[in-house]
Image 1 (spheres, rainbow, N blue to C red):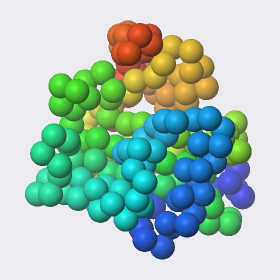
Image 2: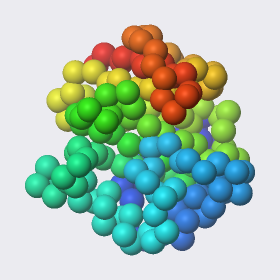
Image 3: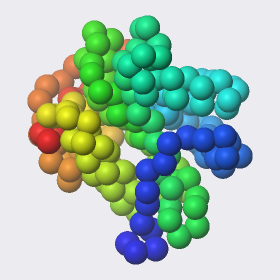
Length: 175
């Protein structure tokens, strides 16, 4: 996995062109939702999205109906390519209790290479450094690949729920 080593990097203006290409690859695959992207899939303007995710990292400036959230691009060190996106919500409000502390997506052309497992492993370190004791992660029942990623990182099944007529499970990862 040496050449596939990644690092987590906060979004910046310098990453705009790459980020838009990353988003477009999801859309070209017919994927309308980019999990863990903090609405990057719904925000046309990169600068607006960047301002929003930057504000939401700080308790002083976080959107009033949201929670403190860190958003990172996963960048492959060998070529600097964005291969994924992951977020970490420091607390859960009523809306988020079934969505969990973390969401993530891997670029369609880069799936099946272990990136999601590594991204989650790295975000667990960020969560621990932030003083969090555990993470709750939701996953749709039929998303076997993501269930494996969560389990490889110590996720234990906690409960099931239904969201927009989809069955999903919550896993807990102790830190």
